[in-house]
Length: 189
Image (cartoon, rainbow, N blue to C red; front, side, top):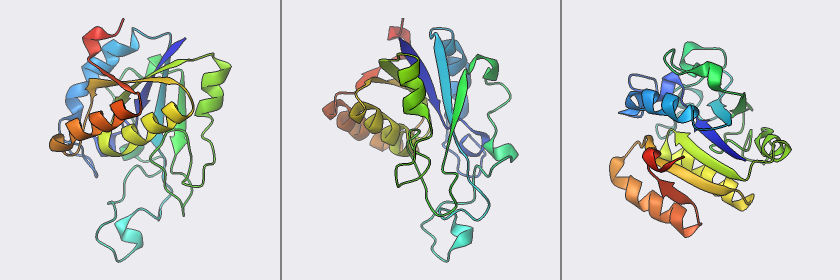
């Protein structure tokens, strides 16, 4: 079976959000259309407690992220125009105050599972298609972990948004070197 995994498509990561990925709002209709092509649609959410270790407000370092995707906040929600009814299950990551995670497979950096791998196995998923944000971080980390876990991985080129567009080709080359496939949405049947 194949499944679509929508990664962190939350208000705080979309245009105008606390940690925006410019141009991401343009993906909503495409992602809604893609959901119709899959028997199983899953999503991940960044799900941080207040005072999370990745927040600049929790430290004096400027290199950390602004507060984002705080549990139960509007910024942690999906945009209202995303067809959330089509999502079969949501997996939460980054929910431990002292650990962060980019991969949808793990709650924190020490490898505690979100339950995604177990759910995919339970539903006999062999092919995982990825859409969402941000390509350099959460999409990349999820794709690499999925390959390590022996899924056939396809990143949908026009259904992912990147913080830095000039990095997109470099990241796609890296994904290809790990045997992930890059495809356009019209190629997905």
